Length: 274
Image (tube, rainbow, N blue to C red):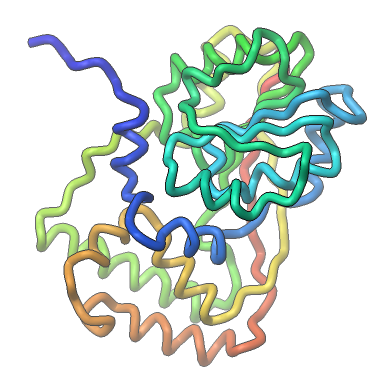
């Protein structure tokens, strides 16, 4: 029996990120990349002001707009209309634009990009076609970076413990209700190996960077509700008590409060120099 061809757009829609209100919640509660990431990639690319930065799987633009002050042109490419339209609606920089598209077919000319990034998105994309497209659009000496943060970021030991308990409850509910994901994903721990085996890069390495933001109880609970495996459970029609959100919220309000605490976000950055 033949295997149907991979459909990047269908696979993206299977994330559940198209559910009503999700994009706005994602944008409000997810962390931002550390500013030092920009400095690092500029240094590796040998470019004080890149002509073009391309952000693949750009979502609501959190990872795209950080380049606005630093590059002549920035393009965010995102398969889901529900996400990139939020990015486009909130964009105030003339150097930044967003378009619908998939990582395997960007429409960017050969060798036009100085820097290509994938923030929290490479594991959602079919690797061979994605890496081939990155290799095509990067100039010689250009840099590709795929970066993901460890979740949940550390904020307070009780809040983090409550988050883990909530996620355990989510997994139990998924099993009870027979929820299985149809989306294909590719392990983040294999990003470096796939980049090296692609033969596209002269140098590949992985480093860690960190960012600190403010996390309130509202943000902590909102962040929990943007995790992919949580989304179908939220659609079961259960109460907050049954979902475990009440318990998570109570701990968050007690430990983080209205003003919040510093949120320590650790990023794993996989970089390849063409």
